[in-house]
Image (cartoon, rainbow, N blue to C red; front, top):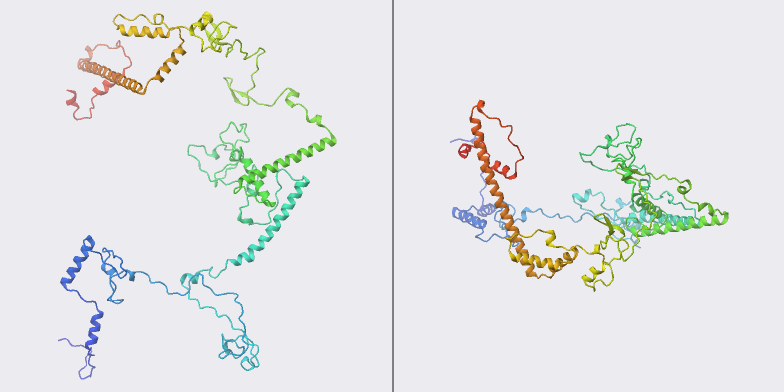
Length: 609
């Protein structure tokens, strides 16, 4: 038996405390009850059934279903929190903060002073008489006789600020307690009054300039007194119509394109900005090449061409008008800005015309303004025209064609075309009726021609005006005796019907006959044509396969001859330089592809046998 080394014999030790029955039961109740083997097995089977979906899932105190796949050590409530509580997930959630104050609660400022009492109250400050502090905390000058004894001049009670219990965010919020209304009353309204006065002064100044007529074409730039006028971005200095302005452009180029800095390697040429990848000036400015001859003439050339300059002028007009007190915005009210600019331009033009007319009325000199242009005075012009080798205009405007001294486009004899618009077998004529007789009367456009018959028109016309008649006897040779009588009779009937008609009339009749066909006949004709096309394609494929088979047979014979030729002795071989060599046909190429043997194929020897 091993004894405790600290045990001293003969020393009196206190007896261990004996637990009562109630204390033992309480301790046993605190510890979770251990399950028996059968209970543990039943619990495990129930959990597996719930996971499989065969048993009803467990519910918590609120009646919500608990996911059976959640482990029991997460769903079950710890015994030290509440042993009798049902499984739930509420203990996994973060408890709500029991703070009385949140973000937005702050100390009150500017509270009005309360009314002072007329008599001293019990428990108040003995010095000033206020109820909110004691004598030792009083901040007033110590009186010779306090309010407790005099009952006069009792101070009002102070406002007790709340004791804020803010959380982590509330303590660190730098804007907590700020009142946005202070900015409106202290800053916004003050500057708004200044802005209204400034706009009124600018409007009066603009009105005076319009009445006096001293306003310039481009509105003069007035310095903006307000740096942050209505939170607008002031781009007067950027978008002023200056051809040499610098604008940052984030652009990329395709790898196949020539880099801008490689267009002119002269260091004195246009400046290239590597940061923005832009070259605003023309790199070929100091060379003899013009802007039309080069692919790239600088970014300013593209930016300040077309309608971009007019757009910039309209933008500057809107800005200057706003500075002068006119309520207009180019992006928000484009129609209003355009109408205002148009009205201003028209009034300015009328004012200039009146001013010019008043000067002419006073001093004269109208005859000098009506002088002919310099091109007529000096018989020369500076218009540059460049032609190619074929006579086409490359650059400039082509000269107007000079008309002949004879009358042109004069129609006579009911003709719709002039003499010489038709040519046939060495004779000139009219294109409208194909007549080769000059000064003849046009029958094709004669009024009332629809009512007359074809025979009367032919009798009235000259011999050369009669259209050529399609005759099978003259155009085609006689049919063979082997052809059917029915086909010859039908062709003769069609020839008799078309006799005395022009090609245009025959074509029109065919079109009318097609239109008169019913849907069933059209469907039948379409089906017949499709069948004939299919048959023709089948015959063509059959003929092509036959040609390929013949070519394969010839190719095999040629291969045998080549093998026989190679097997003979070189001294006994014949010359083959006189054999004809021609381009292989499509069938021969297909035959060569089909008979060609792939030597890499292990079955090539078996296929060649």
